[in-house]
Image (cartoon, rainbow, N blue to C red; front, side, top):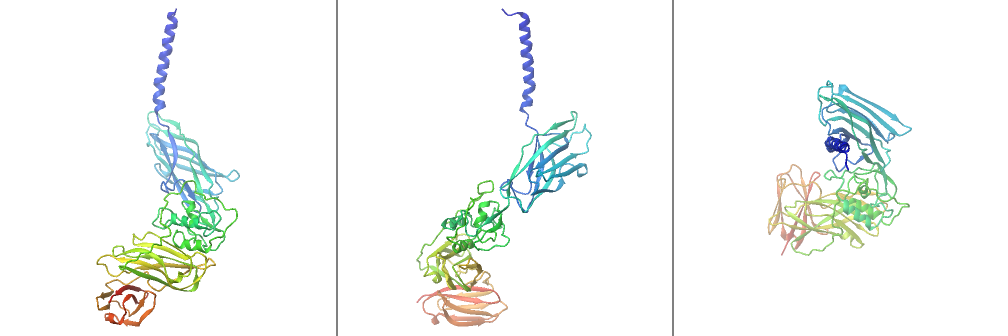
Length: 497
């Protein structure tokens, strides 16, 4: 039997619990009031790491906090020996009411920033909602240990709330951490950092070719004293650490020239190779290219443009850049030239559809050849109605068996050419007519595809015209070379009988 007193007590108990839950539910549904760091020096692809020798900045941001008149906190980090506070700037609060005290605990390796900020309001005046409290700058020392973790911790973080219900609230915070990109040791040619130079290193260059340049999303760094010599060389880790090793020549960009370093150091090994380090994350922006394109194309409509080089030094390979107008011509392929005819050859070139490409070729047995002759041919097709193909070859580089890189002289084209308004070339079925509209004297010469001189050099003065009858040439394909003051135009043409 239930007594009336017990029933009344139970009802009162249930009512109390109901009211308590009703009061707690809104509080439980409120988002947490937090304080956090927001990187200001890097986009989302780079905001998870910091780089040695560089400064980085953070904003201190409050979330889900309204009517804020002031903020106070300690910000600590664990790398006082390598990362130091370098300055601050005001954000949503005036600088005159801001206190920043830097304390350093060298024994414990901890740096502490003590920050107190007020906006100057009276306590009954509401302040800012979700303010950015302050901006802080830090610098990472050159000796910061690569792949270490920089951890920040907020201690005693509080916000002063103004208005009718002025009070102090405690702010919760995560402990943001950043991976440190420091200096790593690179062995030129070991592009996958596995301790041996082999065909897998070619694949890594192909994967990352083009990265590190000003146009790419990956930031690269030049080595301080780069060389291709087989020795340990310090390099500042790139945005993606793995790509650092692919820059075999250390010039800050992954290019075809890095292939030459692989050829020069092929088969070399080093002891106790470290695994590839990815800098705290998978490599972003992988780049796929085709390797080993060596297809043969036989068509009477294709022109074979030679890349003729010269150097006093012997070389085991050649690399360079080809530029052309994709509206006028199509580059179908690149083939090894006579210089490499008696050697086992490695050949790589990139996509030729965009108006430029890089190439690299060399002997796979590291045998040196005399760098004087035709290194390669471009197989080119003119588009309908286009003028004869004119291309520019630049950045030509050779490498010796001693792993020293050196520039090569180009004999069949140069980067800077004459325009059609400066040198007019008219070709008909009977002759070739050249008119000069430049101020300097031009030297004209004719050569076969093998680089053999057909006629003695001729000269054309400013404003004059010279004509060459085709009757003086046997049937075949030729090049007209027009040289002036530091510039060179190469004009291919064909004579049919």
